[in-house]
Image 1 (tube, one colour):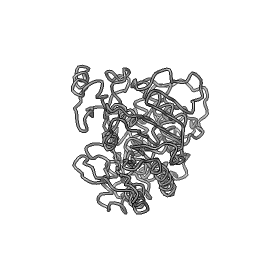
Image 2 (image 1 turned 60 degrees about the vertical axis):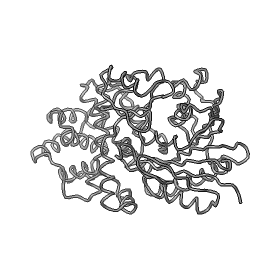
Image 3 (image 1 turned 180 degrees about the horizontal axis):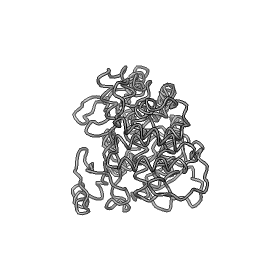
Image 4 (image 1 turned 90 degrees about the vertical axis):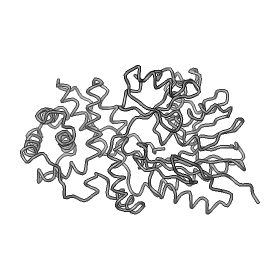
Length: 468
């Protein structure tokens, strides 16, 4: 579970904008998103803020430029530094415009170079930096004259555009060679995976609907997984609005089967938002009672909305006002706003617990490139303390003989294997319970970005033994 970023104030003032072409507005929006990330804001929030007035195609281009620039930002900044002796002192918004243009000129080559330059120069006025048009034009023209090549002789962390502390951690955890592979995979665009609601429609039947709609796709493991050859807008997927399919990565889909669900069990989904795994639990076909909690009321409301779309909850649970309620109840399902670290033994006890812990998100950078620039080294120590608190609280609510599955979308060992090893050492009743997962047999499995095209993900399974 990626730890959600706190919403920061958007620094761009809303003002009446001069008329401009869609191409110019795309470049302006992309640069504002990049600048916002560098100021500590979430790319998801920035995307909503700066693309809502764009058409679907213009929004797609703006996001492609912003995401691509953030994937390769350090390398693009190094190129800018070689083009101008004033690069380090350049206004952040102007520098973002230039880096976005350099990305287009080197990695988005389907766009004509002259169009990328002219629209970027015009975008200076649209983002309140009209005075910089001459500088932007001069830098980009020089880049083209000198061969439009990015620097080659740079440190590896610059080449892969990874924060130095992050790359050093990967080297320490996996060695230099594998760290380079992780970094390269983290800059690759992630494929789009679907999870079919297999109690409503078979994967084979859904594949036929996709092919009939002209969408190329193939089925894969685990059962219910479908991989699209090309990403599609969610709302345009067959039966998406009817609640028969969800977008969910391969790695995320592998967690719920590890619970070994059985009829009659009490199941807890900690830190449940946005609800993908809760939906998967409810689609298991088992007669269970599910409790799902999340500390953020708005994120819990988003979980409810997803479960309503999937017809797992009645639509009447959706609130009418702006304030989300603290809990939601339906037969066999309870959702509530609660910090999982405050769970207490004795109040409720569970046969199965899924703990998708708040984490750095270092395994899903290819989907969220802003993670590279928003995370800090000191965040990891704070996250591991939080994870341990939640683990302790959840474990206290697990019945003897029950199973807890701990997952993160991180690839830092401090959040994963080191966390679980330390917990087992302190809890004699915590017994590792091996499982088979995509060719691995262990009680802990670390998947790295790109394995079977999935995200980086960690899984551990523990059984609570009886007290001796």
